[in-house]
Image 1: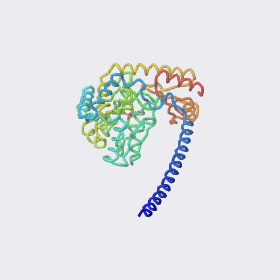
Image 2 (image 1 turned 45 degrees about the vertical axis):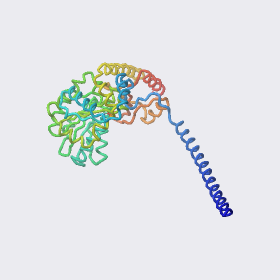
Image 3 (image 1 turned 180 degrees about the vertical axis):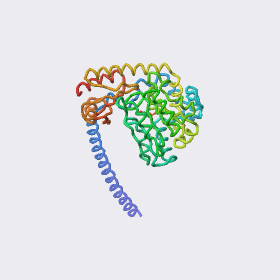
Image 4 (image 1 turned 90 degrees about the horizontal axis):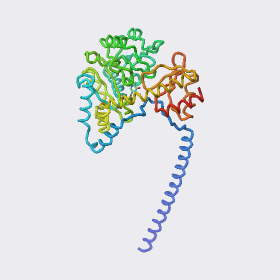
Length: 385
Ligand SMILES: Cc1ncc(COP(=O)(O)O)c(C=O)c1O
């Protein structure tokens, strides 16, 4: 019994030793693999330029406001609750401010999701094969989403002044057109459309097809109330207006946006969203505060204008032209290949965007950051311009 038991024990020990060796081996192998992975990661990261001035996504470095940050922090305690009341309140506030019925307002976690929901509505309700009409250049999120799931896009070049070519666009609307997309002020140009022409175009087109006006940057316009197409919604026209808190409110990471349109369209598009509850309790409370913080909006715009004036001067001094911007970014033609320009700026710690080749030129879009970030841009730019 004893022997058996000791044999059993020694066998067990052998097995245990083998197992331990295996485990130790795999641990060594594992730690070696980890070391190799770490070295590779370090090498990869060492190759990646460190970005000190992120001027590539049109974010607002002056936000969120102090009041919004306070509301965010205070909202944490109750964040085990679904934010139903705060969202209802936010919708009510927006409806009141815009003088539309609450059923006209659809909230979302950023306006990007609402653009995508509109693309889904287009593909699944109107039908794949339908066409979305837009200007070119313009913001492509909705169109890209729609074309990836079977819709087609019809892009009409801008005029030589970088406004929409309304006559050419109107001429392209036909039976296959399912939606007309306008971004105003436009991204990436920063140009604001001719007001009366835009209003006439939207009103006429909306009698035929839904018109989607993306007003992500409307707060930066000199007169947002004059610039918006909201009046057409109030007049019962089939116009959808998208807005976001990501820009002037500085909420890009907090994710709040909304769509305003006729109640039946809003109901249809809502079927393709996860609902307003995609907005977190903290973001909902912060948005409620920020929406009413007119002082912060004024401050944000004033800082943006300072950075814009500095950038204009920098570009002018280096012999560059630019498009006059009604937004928090500026588009200008560069004198080298876009990818190379982007890499050279990134090497110097500045991220910008350069994917546009248009009217025979390569273009760079710079977001307006803090003055410190703009100076980093200026220093890097002077080296390579
Ligand atoms: C014109 C335009 N529309 C919509 C969006 C989406 O913004 P968000 O999803 O952050 O609300 C952006 C983002 O940059 C934009 O430039």
